[in-house]
Length: 233
Image (cartoon, rainbow, N blue to C red; front, side):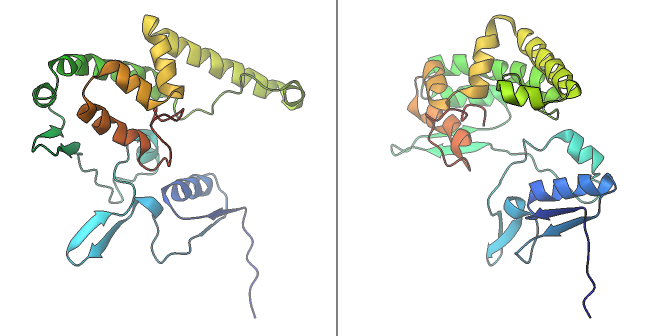
């Protein structure tokens, strides 16, 4: 005789997003059912031996969007999570025998880029400084729900006063964070909403460097580098 099981929540797919969601629901006291069709869990973040003796990341190869708060709150490191630095970060071979190798050493990166363009080597440091400045302002609020700042009139009426106040507070906080960037706020907004291609073409002249940096914008996105939103990725 089968015993009927009841759950508060059912999460379909035991990828990294499903696992995190199920873990937080369980921490909140919910009875959770997590379903996965494969024999292994982890989704895109698994490591598999596709060829004898060779283990690779089947899909996702970085976890830069996995917030540190999640790692700490779910005690992932205490349960076996080991983060390996991405070094080198990229290797781009050229048909003429040259190559572009990038890693964590900024001076080395500038030397590598200078092989293709002295101008790009000088601009690269400023480009990275912009990315770091934007990340520094936005990282503290990434875990917060996005504010609904432009609701339709009917949806506005359906929202509670508490929801309206939370959206207003979150929107003001976002404005303050972006405002702290000063004259670079328009560039920050473009990075969050725009396409990767025009930004890279404006910053750099070398196709080799453009292509290398554009790779991260489209991997897993199923979009072209001209699509809005790829600059953020």
